[in-house]
Image 1: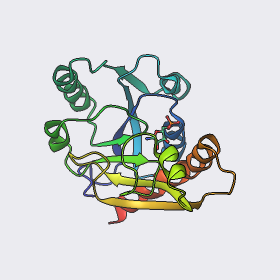
Image 2 (image 1 turned 135 degrees about the horizontal axis):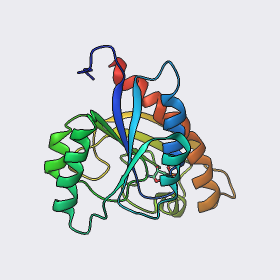
Image 3 (image 1 turned 90 degrees about the vertical axis):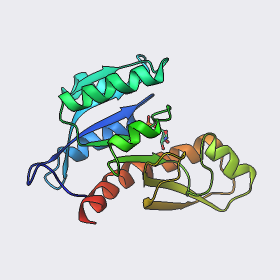
Image 4 (image 1 turned 60 degrees about the horizontal axis):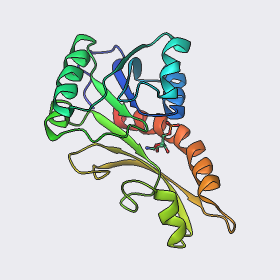
Length: 193
Ligand code: GRF
């Protein structure tokens, strides 16, 4: 990825809809010297997202737009991103699908984390589907976002073994721990490409 800001860190926004545990791990990572990014903005479509609390804890700007009118919300969001000089977007449990037009404006600069070994199990209920299909392995993937759901170029994956008595909850927990490690690694990889 080309840094338009020369040697300074790339101003990044993280989009969330829920708990924000990946957001937390990205914030921690961004404070490390090795991080090529700083997190300047937390955005959510959900005013009740728990993860919005990290705005106060870490003193990071937050914005909420409900996405009921997607076009309007996306246009507002684009101007918020512009005002804040945001260059990169990390989706972390963001439950809305961004339009082609929005993605075009940040072409190659939007990343997402997904709790499966893509291209397997795109979309929702990944753990349940993996277990129902008696998969031996699952994992998580960080990928670039394109206009099709969970389909952009893969940056990094982590594979984990599914245990004998695995449940949806235990698998989700196990994979989430790996997600927190994988996302920062993927960001480093993107900047070294
Ligand atoms: C993660 O499993 C992520 O892969 C998926 O949604 C979940 C978000 O968790 N897209 P959190 O909000 O980061 O805790």
